[in-house]
Image (cartoon, rainbow, N blue to C red; front, side, top):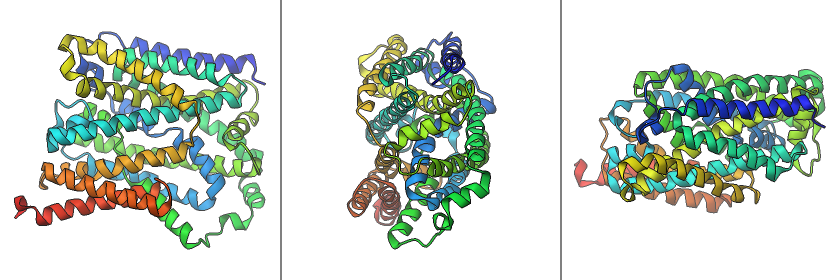
Length: 455
């Protein structure tokens, strides 16, 4: 049972988010200020907001669940997580200056490939953003239900706090709130890990409880395919819409590279902590029939009263820092690219706030029906990455052609290969994403080899 101090800590966390967000929401006059802020942000804030956005319920609750079900080899795929940021810093930060005046990833694709590709990117961006918000809402409901709080009422209250500061304050409010949430979860996670780690007897306790078979890597052919596909999936920069928005806020290729390299370093302790927590959950929640709920209960029950509130606040911080960024980006894209012709310029700021509020509210009933966090994220990625990654990578190199035909050829083969991967694997997942990206690359090579424009 939660103590008064635990409830107070959670309450103070939510009030802190609301206060910081609304305080930073003042003096926004235009849609551009709402989207990118009024001035340059320090690299510390941008590092924190990009990392906080990238680390979602997928990387915590979802990953712990997969460690439980798939075993040690899933932990080894974490090695690819820093690669994700290293590729982003080395390749995708090039020539970011060419996107001056852009507010979203849709605008970036218009600069590179024209208006028609922008339409498709706008649609898949909205799908990705709303899907990610839905995942985070569902994760909040899991956490609150597991600790005995009415999941519907608790989720509504938590998410209404998020919607308020995100919709009213724009990216400025979201960025400073992400910094606060980044600090909260980087304090809470070591506490969770330490309690769980020593609770099972340290490294020797983990090995003795799990046994040598858990660490055995004699994998079947199917397991090897799954391992390779997850490893490759974790290495591919997702180019999430809010992350691309943060790159536009930084405006400098050199600064963007340094920020991504710093995030690569932050990944190492973060996923080491998640790996340890995942193995202790495997020990303590054996034969669980409600794994998601049992994970939260295990994390909370292992700490004393007063600390449990910090644990829940840390988990909420991880989730809300992702949800607010995706909600903010979705509202900007929807207002600027879908409602653009229906609004006067002076009305756009009010409209984007209304859109943010409405999109947030609409995501709640979808999420509360129940989803699998990891599988849903993998399905979203299998539609997103094959369309976005390779064309954006090509666009970052000025020596390569960025013609509309190249985009459509890449997207066509990317989606085709992704569907073939889904047929082979039985679902949209890591294999379909990796094959989709390979198909997208094949489409680019095919276009460059046979297009009359390149002869």
